[in-house]
Length: 367
Ligand code: KG4
Ligand code: ZN
Image 1 (cartoon, protein in one colour):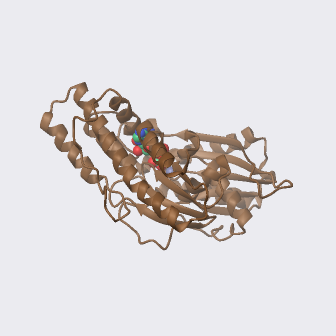
Image 2 (cartoon, protein in one colour):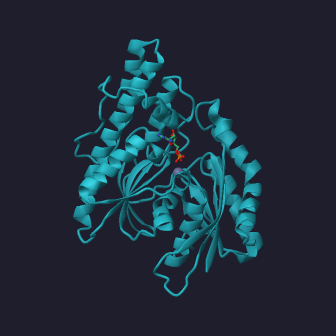
């Protein structure tokens, strides 16, 4: 039995969790258990500012983290003595929050005489589908959150290849900025989706950024500009205008995303021809959007891919995915690669080989 305490503080959630893996008689069959999963969202503290304010986030983590870790241990009925390691997010993210989480984890690890495993937040997202669905490698991951928009080929633990990223805004950021422009409250994504449900998606012909391009990446800033121009042209906006803009924006996003992901699925087929039933996994807050989900599901059905969407609370930021990444690293024998002397990295690409790109691996840019 492996048990790991995970800690996550890279953005605006303070989270701790204990995850266990029973080695049992068939260690090749994953049967992990989330023994506790405590997430404290700071959304209300940031709402007035229309985005995450790094200084407020760091202070809130300081105030909450001790209690959240205690609650996660209490919920799991596992004592600190019984855990095998402490795993904490060490990047990418807002550096103030990362320092709070990683230093707390180091202190706990030192006091309890346990190993510390520094985890890349993106690796947490990338491996979640193995925690929830026991997925085998390789698979394709679409990560769409407020800070990231990436397609990653997940080939093994510690073996990731980024196939696409955004060249400007993250998709969640595009939703949030669109909401702000239209006077909808933060966080924008769910409110844009709600307004869109009453709107006419064909009223505005917004651009589908990168659609048809041979370059694999995403772009959303042109779409944002088109939304601003349309809104300015018909201001003042009625509720129906707002709904129509939201519906048209969402349709453009879904269409553009479908095009980009479609390319990646074709590449996956080419690179992994032996996979009988390849899988597309989605993660990140934007994956909650029903129009986007339906587009991706249809695409997977057409192309013979399994569509894997872990439960929403494990798709958004949480510490169970960090604890799980720690367990995966222990099992793979690479837990000491990033250990007690690791310092927080606000930028930390999952795939060190792909060229860095402005706008990728960026978090907290929402404010
Ligand atoms: O993964 P997440 O909870 O936090 C990080 O950014 O790491 O993602 C939050 C993002 C926000 O930009 C939010 O507006 C967006 O996900 N989001 C949505 C929806 N729910 C959340 N975007 C579109 N439609 C939604 N239903
Ligand atoms: Zn995240």
